[in-house]
Length: 242
Image: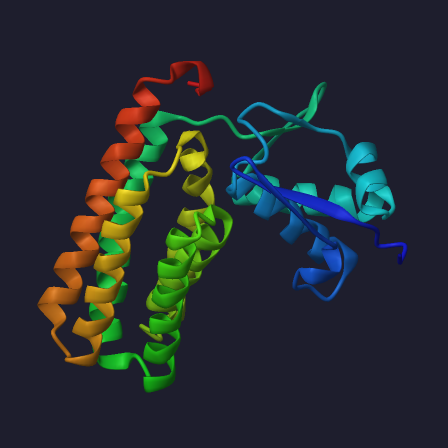
């Protein structure tokens, strides 16, 4: 085993093994950043959990320096809070902030989908379909980690297919600031199947250049999903930081 070491990533109760070498990045700091971001976004950490630099360094087989640099970047993304006396902690969930972020995300993600109707390439559409197929197989196999990863890849590609880089950057920034709010959920297979049928409908609408259908499906999916998150969080105030 290399000095980069061996790390486990936990996805909502499931565990599988990866090395930080599996993550994109030109430097150790980049790879540590991607590793920690993945753990935060998939619920391996809870809001308020403390990140100890030395423990992370030892776990990943790297020095403290790349971990410290990664933590600073995650704090600038809004995923961590840095306190002078307690160090780095996973940012608490805040309903008021999330409601604002979700309102903006609905509009931006709907706009990106509208633009993708005209801008998406045939290769992008084929890849979107492959993600839908992957999610179908994941549901059949009760493989939530793979479903979660494919779902994220589907939406990222859908918005990138708008070929509007500034818009995509805004969406991805807001995604990072809000996606860990879903860590409290247990996935309902029936809801996953319905959601993936919506994904399939979006791809069909993109292929047929049906702008209004694509936009209406994404808007309805996002508004419904975000409402579920907010309602659930209001019932789980023990997780919240304000």
